[in-house]
Image (tube, rainbow, N blue to C red; front, side, top):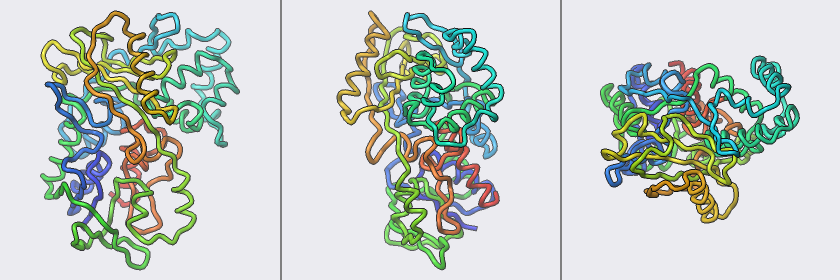
Length: 409
């Protein structure tokens, strides 16, 4: 059995590793000169920065991505964060993430505990947003700001843009898998290890290789056209989202086309900082619900010092893009950093924005339509087809697992 994979991002590489380990002849086509997409490393001034993600795996060594890495035999070490997360209140005081209920009245604490313990009962069947769900049950300013901070860091969205049912799935997964972790060596180690698995099983990865068309016959994907050559395959996996995938074949399914038109991407800004001293002092997520724009910050060198030169620290902030004025969004984020770290000396190494044709997620959490397409044997994986309740790369792993179940591996 032969599989062609369009795109060598995390989703494509994870699918390729799983298929190649199951005996498929795997061939991956990547239009860029490097693999890994937005989950690999950038070397700059001795720092290992990242192309997209924060050198963070949201559920660490226990989550769906780590589980799949072990399944395929990818050699990746993940250091779990300690503490899981810290929250800065409006007074400047910090509290542990598991103690965030201290910001609520006793009545609201009891109510929240009941809802979280019985979340299946409280999961709405409607499209009510997480913001409106919070207002309905709690009407609490602190909880709403914390929700915006968490959603901004984890999903590059505000609470008003996330369906409550999706957010409650994410909360369930947090209880199941716990907090984040840092892959030793950064994002590039993960995608590099997956590439090694694929090659060790006889697979091929082509960079600077553009797929122009998906070959179809009788409503089935039968191969691809890449670099002017036609390659026959048994299945095709696309890691470029439903919209771009649909442009590669003649799709007459109007219902499908209407669905993908409604899929909403999410946009974000990441800032990488260098400091001679720790700015956080721990490896967990630092949530900033009272900042103007910054949603969450990680000091990844507390988990892996090799991500920076000796005696240097690498700090990475993330924020959801709220307005259409990208320069203003960046400036507001920079002002937040000054307020969050008053009197501290740091250098801004890199500012990255993820929008337009290169969003954080081709399909924002809660808006993706799954892995299937109108064609038999054509599946979509990656940031445009994540599994339910999956934060970023964990969602990518869940989506790949769903596609593999459909394929039967």
